[in-house]
Length: 346
Ligand SMILES: [Zn+2]
Image (tube, rainbow, N blue to C red; front, top):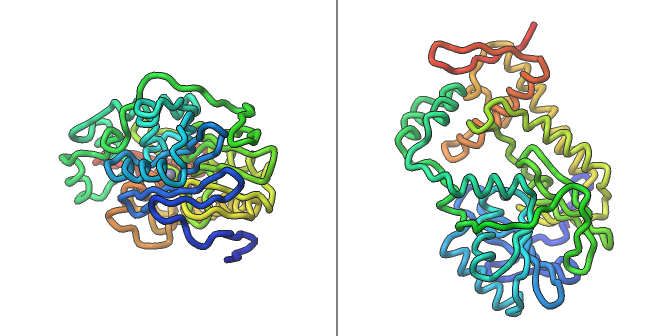
């Protein structure tokens, strides 16, 4: 058992590939690999008696489908999957939802925004970045070498890691109460990491399914993209964390999208909120001098950002700058090359 300011991890190790750990009666925790720095995603299966409900699905690849087949035949005992619940639209969560729908006849339950975003991005396949994306990178003052490479490279495409999504889903919305795995769950929407991000709170025991809205030991990425360059997801994140904190209890077992299940949710919610306030304070001090977003990593991350993390760091820097801008703490002007220069207001 580890113990860091009230946060405890009842399982020190995750399940091995193709295996499951029963974390509560009828609730299985499983893992799928991701080919990134964050190298795994957690998925769950809840026993509905004659079938399973799956929560989140992993990237779509030949390898992850093979692991799922092993899980379905092994720990899941060959019982059908009747429902797939997706917490948010990101590809590590929605990746195989369409596969469960088309190949297993499962019904997809998720939020309307998650479904629309996932399906739009799945269909929006690009061989090279769109001009809007390149303009957005320039406005962020992206490192010139990285910009030069990205300009002509195939960008990250949902279609490469998300199985085709058929029409049809069931919408889950705020204040719904849904029955899964012999429990009634309250639905509360998260926001900021992904819009209309589902979280589930059991009425019958101490389980919380949090997706990436609440993670232990790592912070969920909060990013701004060319889709909505003026967005303020940090405000959305803080609002959601404050609102969800009302339901947090220290004995709840939190089942998140990455890392280990944990207890100590009130402490973790406080940390998630405080970490961003701390980052915003450091960023504002850094803006005594005018700077572009690409020059704002040091105060936000307090460590060297490698090439593999550059993209995520950049969208996160823009998110925090946009937040200070919407608060009225900074002003911005265009540099000759199109980059926004941000500076603290006097
Ligand atoms: Zn995730």
